[in-house]
Image 1 (cartoon, rainbow, N blue to C red):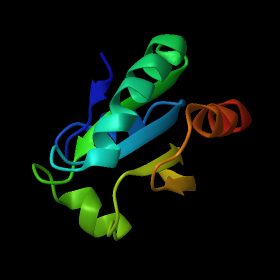
Image 2: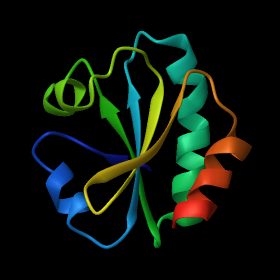
Image 3: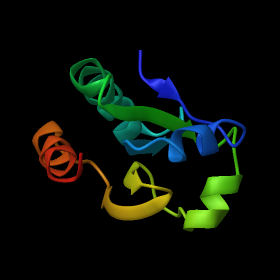
Amino acid sequence: MALKFSDGNIETYFSQDKLVVIDFWASWCAHCKRLTPVIETLFEEYGESVNIGKYNVDEEEKMVAQYGIRNIPAIYFVKNGTVIDKLLGDVTKAKIKELIELYK
């Protein structure tokens, strides 16, 4: 199961020397629901080398404000606490995987 990122635990992941892939989502978002199995599969594939998880924009607020999240789903790629890339909208597994391979 993919990691559950929150305002309380995200700094722990940012402090590790690993790529962090954050899926900003909400339970009412149809595109987000379609992306969930993709995120779960990627977590299984990269779980040891990449921190991959979900951040519920309805339950958390710090990173929504910090990154100016206005549209979901939004996939952010973070390394050493810095956003290095992002994908917005209904994206494919292949595109997410391409960026993971590029930045891990």
